[in-house]
Every structure is written in C-alpha cells, then in structure tokens.
Image (cartoon, rainbow, N blue to C red; front, side):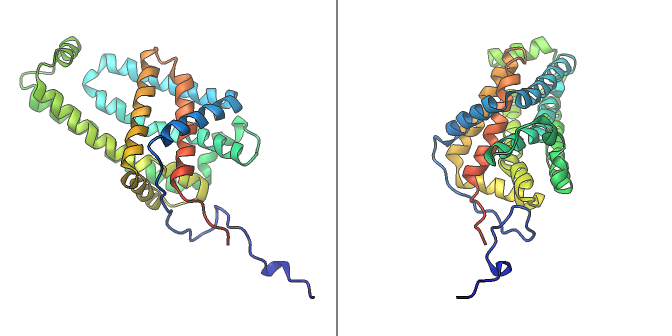
Length: 269
C-alpha cells in the first residue's frame, strides 16, 4: 500500500481563510445568557489582571460620562451613544482574552492591546457605521427636547423631577421610544459582529448582518441578554463606577461566549 502524499490530505479550515461562507446562526435557549455570564465570570477569574485592566478603562469612561452629564445633561443620549460605541471596541481585548483561553494560549495583556490590527479595515467600517447611527440618535434626542419643551431647556433638577413624578408623559414616552429604537439598532448590529471580525477575519457588513440574524432568530434570549447588559451596567454606574471594573469585563467575556453559542463553527475542510 502506497503512502498518500500529505499535500493531498484534507486540512482543517482556519479562521483566516479567504472566501468565508456566510455565518450560520444557531438558536439558543432562553437561559443561555445566564450561562454566558457564568462563563464570562470564569474567564475573569482565569485572567484577572488583564481583565481588570479593561474594567478600569470602562470605569474611567463611566466617570467621564457622569461628569459630562452633570454639565450637559441634555446630551445624555449622545453620552450614552459614545459609551455604546466605544464599549464594543474597548472590549476587543476581552474577546481576545477569552479566545486565547479557549485555545490554551497565554492570557497576557500585551497581545490584546493591538488585536484590532488583525482586521483593522473592517473594524473601522463597523465603528463608522455604528458611529453614524449613534450620532443620529443623539440628534433625534435633541429634537425630542425641542419639540416637547417649547419654552426653554429644563434644568437638571426639573428634568429629574418630571421623570420621577411622571409629569410630561408625552416627553417621557417620546424620549424612551426614540431611545429604544436606536438602542435596538446599535445592539442588533453588535451582538456578534466584533467577535466575528476578530475570530474569522469576517468583513464588517457580513458580521453586522449575522448579528441582526442572531437577534431575529433568538428574540427571547436576546431580550434577556440585553436586559442583563442594561442591569449590570446600571449597577456599575450606581456603585459610583466601581462596579464597572468587574462587571464590564464579565459582560465582555460573556459576549465572546454568546458569539460561540450563536454562530455555528466553521466545518473542517
């Protein structure tokens, strides 16, 4: 029996191969987001130093957001937009840490700081697209203020009082409604897009379409996942941003595991 030429043997598909097929989206259970959080916490325990470094970056962003809000509260949507835009980009290092741990590679900080270079052009496209959406969101919020406060912009105290006392329900309903629309778009575009671009070198448009597909195929689990992100982020802000140091790395690591569950792995070739 003759020995077969190794060059003719099938080779495993790598994530860097060109001509990648469109990602196949899987359906997950309603409780899947809680498993992602648990796995994210496990990643944090496995690589505490690098993970907490990114947590400190998020905490610094939180402090900046709060300071800006106190002096320009009417731009709250713009500030939230900036946090949502920068968040997935800062979390790239956390995705890489989870990826390296998954592969049994050293989970050190250095390689994660420049991981964006792996697919810089497409990550840039994603940032621009998401940035445009969030800038429109910020402008829409200002239009809501202008339409529902015909005399002048309210003071911060009066704004908080009206929200808590449920006065001016038209403003509250319009503001929340507009915010939910744009928050949903931003969330849908980023569910698995950045992990896909980092892991498979996928192009930005395909990655965002796959993210929208993940939301459409799993509306229940994605609602739970979005709710967990909002609650954990709110807890982080409520603890004077100290909680963000731990909670944001957990969310970042969990996002990687969400990607792994939601997107079918590439078959070997």
